[in-house]
Image 1 (cartoon, rainbow, N blue to C red):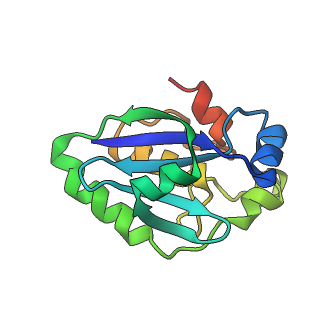
Image 2 (cartoon, helix red, strand yellow; image 1 turned 120 degrees about the vertical axis):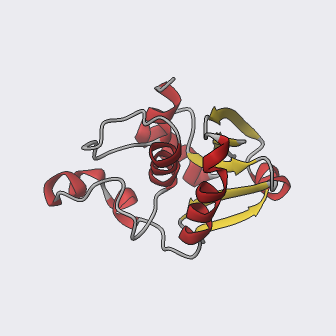
Image 3 (spheres, rainbow, N blue to C red; image 1 turned 135 degrees about the horizontal axis):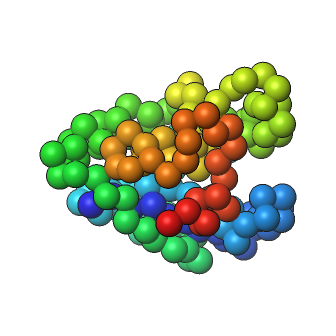
Length: 147
């Protein structure tokens, strides 16, 4: 089973992101229950995977939601996540979502990742998409509002 983690921590950057994004969450990630690994995109590390215990130690305040991936798609979903490892962080997401609006860059550009971009792209590929394909700004706040 795969799950989306919406989370935050006690760090200045988390407080700032929550303020700017009007959100109770500053970060999102994908949890693979079967392997016990969390996949995430961070400014410091880019896209990576790490043990769930390490992740939850850094993000004690969190909410977990199921991503309904069909069992037949589990292997390909995991392969896709693994293929993203090492891709850089999407700094344009932090530099300003406005830039993306004017340049036409989409939130699901696979060359680099912002945390909520990758979790929503994963959900769109392997479960039921929650946002229209042309959306140019997906944040942890938007993910929190989606059911």
